[in-house]
Image 1 (cartoon, rainbow, N blue to C red):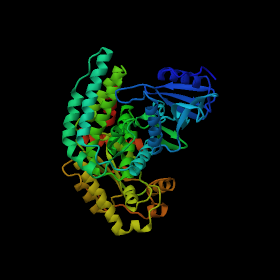
Image 2 (image 1 turned 60 degrees about the vertical axis):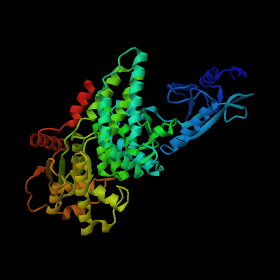
Image 3 (image 1 turned 135 degrees about the horizontal axis):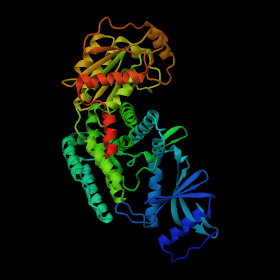
Image 4 (image 1 turned 90 degrees about the horizontal axis):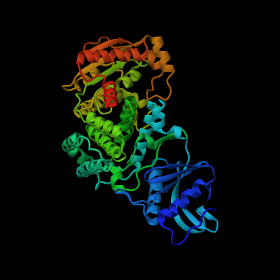
Length: 526
């Protein structure tokens, strides 16, 4: 069963024997063939339908796994924390024993180490791999955001953590980390501008951070939600490998947790997916629109985290790209409000969803859809049918008031908005226009033949809209549409309509449109 341990064996030597035993198929319940993956903190052994994660016996500035007691605690913590995000992936912490039968998992000999046991998944289903191969869709990003919102909802508030000063400490620590990493590699640290901009932005948003902390928005989150730590498993998006070694570091404003995912999607050039994830989280978690004001700081800080990590690992190209992204995210944007109206089946939602990522904002525009707000108000799933009472005249009026109020709040937070509703009644059009305050407001009415609209409605599946063919057939357009509303022929392919709207916005507003395309080029060039 391989080399035997002696009482004088050092921890590192003992782990070397254990690693060799895993690779040789010499650990009971971990059959060959075994594939090994190494990280700076762990060894992962892929065996059969399971994965065994062994903490390296190392002491790092941010984590100490040098003793058996510490590795046991880390394994127990990792298994516990990750069940909140991926309950079907994590099987638990398991002791590795050594006795007459050699190394065993859960054996009867002396415990020599611990592992985290997981179910194995296809690595091609990791979000980073899916992004590289062009397979990561808006639906995948929305599923991940929904999973995160559920985990955050179930977590207990921690009002003693997540203070504005804690983020200031993170900025200072990252600066020291980057400087130390650069010194170790014999290179110069990059520009300090990102740190200065982060400190300036933190000073501006500190009152909101403190208000959210007192309101229970600081919770134990994932802590390390980049694309490499999310996978599709059993048809569900599963965040995994949550940060387990520092409870304080992972207990933050829930939006700082989300910001890692949004930032990494932006870094991958997946602006539409970032926008979809942001909007799904806001809708699913019932977030306050005013909190959109925090995204630039939180996403910029997450970019700074990755920049420092890249510097320490010697990847200067990645460090430069993350620095450029962080500065881009912190650049002020002038928000705008775009309204998309039309009868059921005109294609409003598809057009609105395609326009939202292109507008100014850290993750594009906030997409406010009357059908989604109706489901949220009724406290039902977005794809569940709302009760008939939800469509009573007073309820319709309430939804449109809520839509206008949320749009005004988002605009006040410096976020662009795309409002998606029928807007058949003139009072609803007036209300959404007034929500723009002093910011640019542009509105488009989509027109399509009845037969086209009915065919589109009949084909809907899993959509927030409850409109059926009968309702769509009974709808009538407004008698008159006055400026700023522009009528558009919606009996065309969606990309054609989207390009026409974006071109019109660029002409009428001048700046701020095509943000995601320009940003992608700027970040890639960096």
